[in-house]
Image (cartoon, rainbow, N blue to C red; front, side):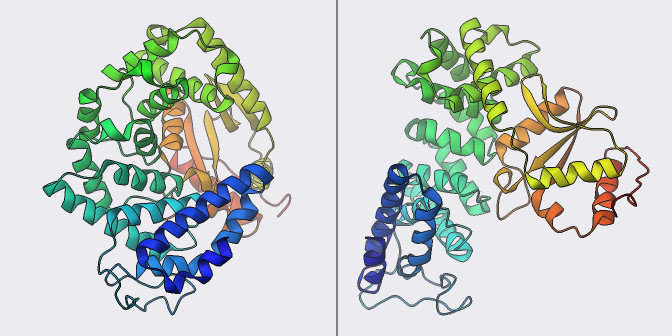
Length: 403
């Protein structure tokens, strides 16, 4: 079905190409659930969907060809009879499909053009008829799922959407995306105060997602945070009522409330706290498999004579590598922790660093891209020495052991 849709791309309008891409993404998600081969299905789709992406871009004036097309700097001409401008709905739909397929990095120019086009169209509609809420939510979800750092136009469009009451329609999905994108702002704070959801009608997982999102965005204790927490605590949930990921998120909410207010007792519930802690410990133990890049960092620390411990628990958080004598928490921030188009951490990673600092740790984040670019052991020792110096610490490395 994927191959057939892509073969017909040249005969389809841009809108039809956008709908076909959505269908491709839906098929991949369905097959991944049935076969357990999510990576294989997405790889297949990325291999074949270039014609569909090019078909969508044909309706954006001045858009560049997708990678693998006629050329990186060659503009796409619309086909005969093609609409001159892509609708916001189709642009957001395409971005959501690309994000679902993990294809944003494979089509960076297309992602940029689609995002800017959608943001500009949303801003234009906001001044006339009001921004289309579902399209804004799709745009936010796509950027968050694809780890795409929002451009200025998209940030302005989202802020205008928030001022117009869009959060009432976007709900938990929009709030999750804003948290992942680390898009806290005064407009968001005011929107949260004006938002009037019905917590009793929300699923427990949605309540946890909202609480976690508000924690990431620094909105712990706002009106809706309190209302949703009370609703969740009154439900008498058992361990089986939520998946491990939701309990782990709730554990992070406990950490955030304790650090924000000095105590979590105002939001405490013995049963919820017990379930959250147990799930967090189970997930921490399950994720104890150490990456090769973390092992390399540990070997380098050993070569430098720096004492360290792996995977220690501290105040409801797990530290990748702790330099206890120096009070340094070393965090291995792989690609999933940062935006792919900007060397900045995602909201959840930034929150964890802030929480560790609030607990008295000096945080040393080692991005995978930086570490991978280093050469021999001497370069790696020098890198860690420089990073520790940035924290005001000086060590005298001995890198000749395994140099």
